[in-house]
Image (tube, rainbow, N blue to C red; front, side):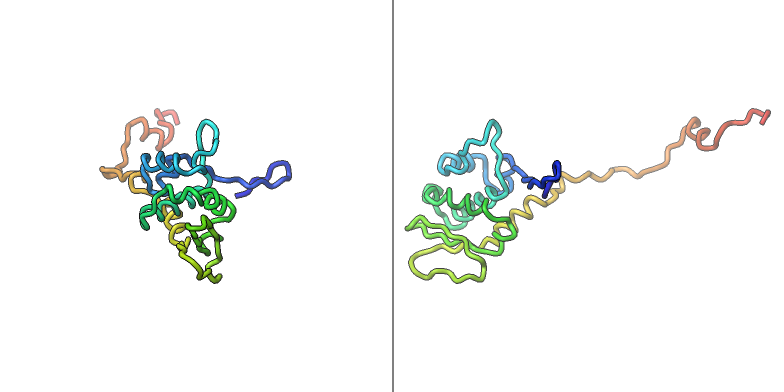
Length: 178
């Protein structure tokens, strides 16, 4: 989204609260507090009320995938956390979802590759396709929950008429001198 101010074009970014970050990444408040202690990018000085970018959401979702789905300890990921957050904040979601991350934990390296690019075949690596992670985040952020929508009325709509309302609808009352 762009904003035109005094002839100059400024990019507007959406910032997310810690609660929105937790909700989008499907992590508990306890998990967030633990990760905040273990991962430097989540502790950055963000003012009185911390806020996170859409790239931060992707990075946290990737960390969730690695810890929950692959059983990695978050402390193991601390060495690549800065690089992960920088990569996720350095590219739009459309670019990220068309690529993959190559994680080389023994050497503490993380690399983004376009989807069709070759992957290195030397050493132990984890390849993370980003399409499902970005799609899940997008669905989570854009979903309209049933509890958020307007509830249906529990009674039928009927026309209610009072004598004053009826007179207003018919026009002025003639008293015989019309």
